[in-house]
Length: 245
Ligand SMILES: NC(=O)c1ccc[n+]([C@@H]2O[C@H](COP(=O)([O-])OP(=O)(O)OC[C@H]3O[C@@H](n4cnc5c(N)ncnc54)[C@H](O)[C@@H]3O)[C@@H](O)[C@H]2O)c1
Image (tube, rainbow, N blue to C red):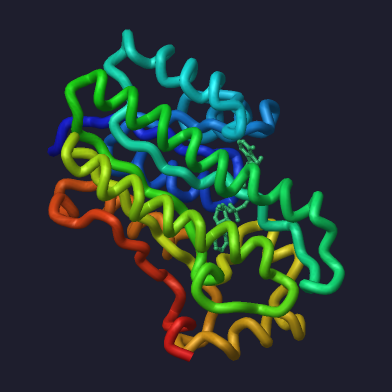
């Protein structure tokens, strides 16, 4: 039995965030779900037995204050930067610059603000700890219409390497998990079983199906664990082999 750690998961009210929370809780850890949707985060935290933290990750002052509030109770050991906007789509000839800016603000600047606040928090506590960013294979493989989102995820992989090389000296490891499409409740609604869209995605995946939330969480738990103590700066695809095609 390992010592319980406290894991802060941003976007914790969403499909993948709740799955990651479940996996950490099952392995005996404490979980804080942070999300800008206050109502959703309270109800998800109550259902899972986690702590709710309403937080907009693009607000760097609120991010810093959030870590301060946990100092008295032992601090945060692991940050999972999972919050992200997936919904901005548009061709390079059509997309409004304002829509592009909105996605960059959350996916890149928000990830940076949380990384900075967590790093300062851990350094003040004497170092150690881990960050796992949720990136996407889209950062490495294009799909028409998804370039704004994909650009933001390429930056998340870059932030992962940047933070990893600078924070190694403090014993803080920084890695990412890069999923292919994941069957969250929202995606199942948008692409129902048997739909042409679902079949088109599945055809791009050598292992033949889209990921379930439960396929992503174990990779996150591993990268945050002692078993990964010599791994930093990677972005691990969990994509059924899609990047091979
Ligand atoms: N679902 C997929 O197919 C898929 C594939 C690859 C990567 N991802 C990545 O996984 C992560 C989670 O995706 P999901 O499918 O669970 O999406 P989701 O929309 O279900 O969850 C995202 C959560 O982030 C929260 N959020 C958005 N902006 C925020 C902000 N500024 N501050 C705090 N919280 C904010 C939302 O309220 C929501 O609860 C995202 O980073 C996404 O890019 C998803």
